[in-house]
Image (cartoon, rainbow, N blue to C red; front, side, top):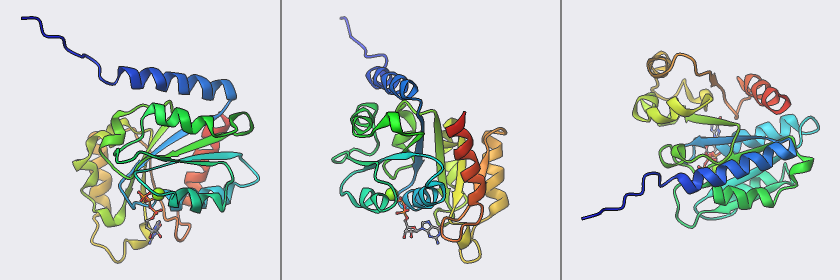
Length: 215
Ligand SMILES: Nc1nc2c(ncn2[C@@H]2O[C@H](COP(=O)(O)OP(=O)(O)OP(=O)(O)O)[C@@H](O)[C@H]2O)c(=O)[nH]1
Ligand SMILES: [Mg+2]
């Protein structure tokens, strides 16, 4: 009996991701794929980023969600170049959805595109979207054990964030243990600790974003 095996179910996604990467490079735009659990603070961080960098960088956003245009509506108050992608139940964005999102942005006029992935720390990690950099976001209320429980996001991100640090005095959270669990998995990944609510630590993130956009 002959059994046909699909060896790479992600092959088509990878091919479209390569097209996205080529399109972004042609337009001279950098792209960040922002991954984190539902409610970890992705949109709030993007809003703070957009208002800090307005006038300095031309930024577009692709907001991924299962349903609603709520994030795009929030972002549109700070940035006209925003596209909402609804996955209709899908737990992550794929490269083809991002391709459609990119088609809705004036890439030639932009320096940087943020992709806010669907709020989920698991499924988005395996899908290349054509980004230049992947950012994995943890937040204080999720608990200090999340890097150990979700090692893939630690292993595959170019930058890690710990958001909502303003909540550290109120939530049981072992900050040293959190940092150590990341270092156990990877020595080299940078970690930025910040609060979009108070602005603490935000300057380091803005510096990272600006450097990426200008390289
Ligand atoms: N205390 C505190 N709350 C925050 C901070 N950032 C975001 N929040 C709150 O956390 C909640 C979720 O924030 P969002 O920015 O919508 O989170 P998200 O990751 O975009 O959520 P999804 O798109 O639904 O996955 C909101 O009530 C925010 O006001 C922060 O730095 N500190
Ligand atoms: Mg959001």
